[in-house]
Length: 337
Image 1 (cartoon, rainbow, N blue to C red):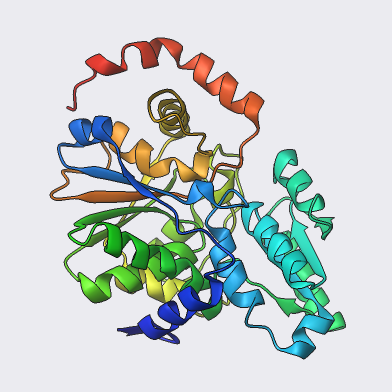
Image 2 (image 1 turned 180 degrees about the vertical axis):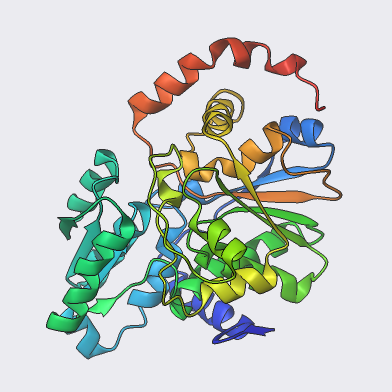
């Protein structure tokens, strides 16, 4: 199966290329979510990657595939945090100079993690699109290679390796809940999964505030919208007006896209910590939020969701859990509407 320039063969090639650089993460059952949803539910723990998110897969596939000339000139990227950390991590591992451009909305804990790798961090503007202006200028003026956070065949193929692992661990998967931002993750996963199981429903989940892919699909073309503060900060940012790959992939392969509120996301983060004993950042918890808030619809058959990241400041997690203590104490009595 192929979707434009990305093929299933590219995803298998990516798996071979990145095998020594990323973890094969576990897919674990969630008995409580299964009881609530009425179907078996499994959690794909990409939060256990060394950089705390799935982004290392795409970054590894791109950087490990660089030519010698590209390695010499270095790489640059724009990020809402997790991708930048992944690029910086892989660049250091490969001995390549890296510059990461972020906006002022990126949380300080994510900026600090990028600095800790030795990469150059550039903070610019109030949106990913404004930070991207600096990154693309460095491509033009210094010949650096852009490691696009989503709209790149190598990055898409790298993220698609998650789909291969889910199929191996849960061959009869019927539903997949995947966080959506720029579309590289859900595009790659959907391509991998639907090749083997075209009947599997791939459901995207994003936040109500600032969901650029959702607004672009409504408009029928990539549109630019303002970045908005959200617990799901890793899902912020546009899909770029010159989007070449992921808009098409998402439009063709995603079955549904649902939105969850900030309250839904906070409750999901609290639930993950209290019931699953997992620290999950807001953008990684939107699949849980969709089930807890009864926004995923009536699911039929085994269901998997990707918990994409764990990069949230500890004091923020404590604050959210404490604010939801009464709700958590009564969680066992909750019944699905």
